[in-house]
Length: 71
Image (cartoon, rainbow, N blue to C red; front, side, top):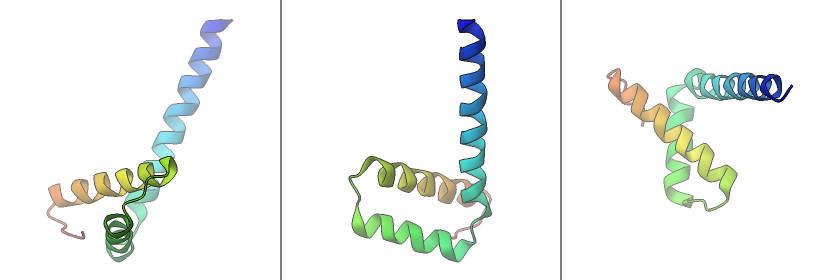
């Protein structure tokens, strides 16, 4: 039964992560650039805000690799 519980937890974790990534990918260049600037300006320390800023940074890098210099 523990194996099933771990499998279920893993499944939901993967689904959650995939949903979060698509949120950033769907964001317009302008909105992403604004959020990136806000992260740099505020330099957050709250765990949730730090995670959000890290995701924004990763999306900026992903777009840069595709020659989209949004931020």
